Image (tube, rainbow, N blue to C red; front, side):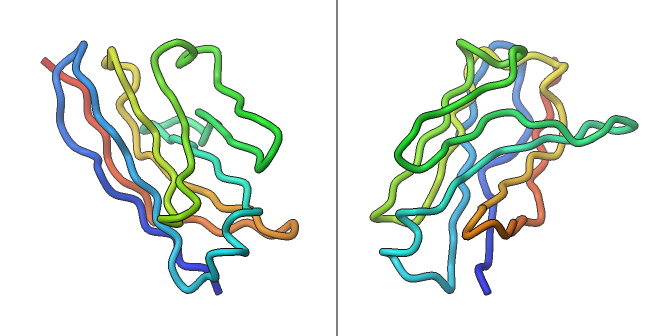
Length: 118
């Protein structure tokens, strides 16, 4: 079973940047190439929402609230996906989760906290 591990969260000030990483373990490199990746977030008292996604071989999509500020990418050789977050705002504060979709099945990480505060 795929193991998904996020890292890179932390406390930053408004306007600063963070890069989150999502590593897939217990997976064969060639299989990872075909995986779809997505980042979600959940703020206190709110539902989990899609932030950004990358569909293998097809492209990326972003929530309107992060377009132009966040960039999702996937390094197949490292079996890792990234979420580069620039110009962070207090409303970006949430637990960020990575999801890997393989053959129609979803695998989630445990989440990493991002706090944006002055």
